Image (tube, rainbow, N blue to C red):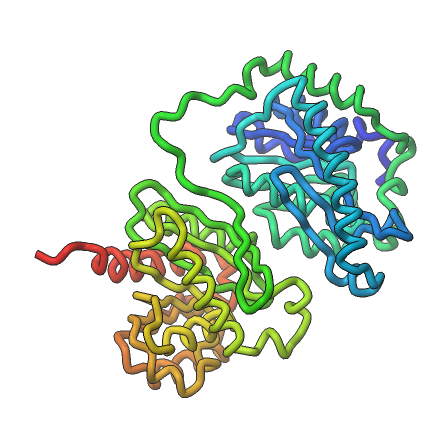
Length: 443
């Protein structure tokens, strides 16, 4: 498909997003080129339009090659693979980051002079760009939207490179793309007219959006203090691990999601389960046990001792956070994360009250399973036969209160209709029973 220009692409994209019309949606464009596309989508959906400012970090000697991106609110996304291949050292990276952050702040000030930020908390956010090549700027924008409280994140673009789209789809609730070329060279190949978009054009589109939805950027006065809901960074094992902490009002316990390989704090599956737990009054910390580089290392993925030690450090950090110091703690693990959670739970003085494994590998905790004292729930799909057998054998080695719950008709990722909901409800009931019961004062 060849688009005449960005506005034409926006009209085509809007037709694919028509189902969001009439919902509590905010359309957000990436300046500059994504804003004309987003403006057409916002107009068709009769939704407010806003921007999230991000800047690509180009390799010093090849500025067109992205080694990462920066975004509003201090967001930094790095492509470790490009950094390694280009041999960019820390000082060179910092120089590029400083320069791009200065430009980012200048653009934020320019665009916010037209209208304040449209509140995203609790709303569906449709994030729009004119196309995606490496995905660095899109990932940074997604991180900003999450940090600003987006309840559901839809990434929508006219064109995208195949590999980038596959990776980004895991980080959002829905990915909409009109064209994924078999041979992708550049975003501009999908456009007849791909001329640059100016700041003045972006400003005029924001003014037009303000005229259509006057006051959309003015949030209603809160009736109660907002919950804590933010991106966090934790140092564990000498590396920086990214996470997302949500602490609802009057939290009765806190659950740490232990992500191993093939998952992340942005995974729609993990975020869905976290939402179910939050609705039950539990705080959640979703974090990634591995750095992006480590995820490609089989040795790191299966280093259960290292992952367990990191989980202990992250839990100690959580104890120092406001609103979490006195809460009973649960660990929710999947895949190798479940093995790490149980290995950590076997450590003397482990600060954990209950453990849940979903489609996990508890067998990776080995002989330490017999030393786990925290009540443990193992959730496995009925059609995930290999993992089910491993869980059955692992449960025989547990000496603590335990249960094996099999979800009928579910495969490893619980992708079948209704199966993830069943798994989430099982986890919720286990944590509420054990965490909340623990938190209640004795008579």
